[in-house]
Length: 189
Length: 189
DNA sequence: GTCTATAGATTGATAGAC
DNA sequence: GTCTATCAATCTATAGAC
Image (cartoon, rainbow over all chains, first blue to last red; front, side, top):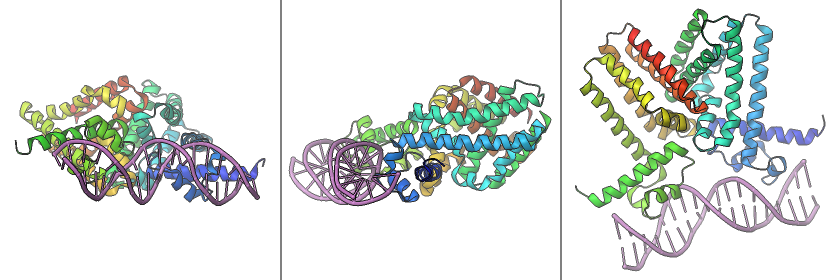
């Protein structure tokens, strides 16, 4: 509970920025948006972060922690690595509403930053690395035939394609059909 | 050749804006960027377009024309609808460099606009409609087993997932491997 | 650590002479 | 249709009192 008050403000900023970056995009989100949502004073934000880029780095770290906790939870609850892989696909289903509305928070962020913010994208890419490495590990444990790194990237790409189309067309039916197919593929592979 | 001079300036603006929106994103591109690239005077741009949104609509129309011409060319050169579908996959291969650098121009644009510019995204989505409907038609002509609209969306999603991962990791090897796999799938389906 | 006030640059957009 | 000049608003970021 060290720096309890300061941490609280800082976490408020991170949480609000995380949602704004996701719902509006990084460029489209202004400091005014963030301070309004987090209800902190305008200049005060620079006590906690030295720039907008710095806020994004904190948001990425926050998401990394959240997703790492999610993966750890699946490993603890599910002993069969193949069931863990299917849990990954079920995550897409359980988040269908936000995916159809705003796209994938990881994919859309990397798509935006990948265009002309290479240093920030390097940070955001760690979110993909997290899933890629975890999926590859579960695939290896499942005793799948092919190269597990290759299969992991294939799986990530399939999930991203599903989220993107579901977002473009606001189509949850498509998402449900494609994830069901992907689950069948995972049981066969 | 009516309005030859004015058309030239207008087309210059559209062409430069098209590349900037693709390479930097719509929000990240400013009027200064566009007038600098197109070498037109600052205020002059408003003689041709009434707003930045208006420029984007013109860019989308331009891309629609380009892609429609591409599809028509494939139909003319290839009589077998299955070969036309494979030409679609080969387009991804032939554009691997720009896809790895900037992502898919259609997918990344829709991803950005889909977040909080619903009216503009409706315009940009027509680019997806163009490919979806054309792919569905070719799939129907190929006598594929399943619903051709469903298969067309599946194919679009696969292509988008491939482009996205290739962009995030700047990985052309991944793109080549996945498109080869997609081509095999098209020959079987 | 919180707040007010504001700097300095850039944004999208306009007016009006030529 | 082209050009200069500039608007008002907004942007990220800073200074300094409390």
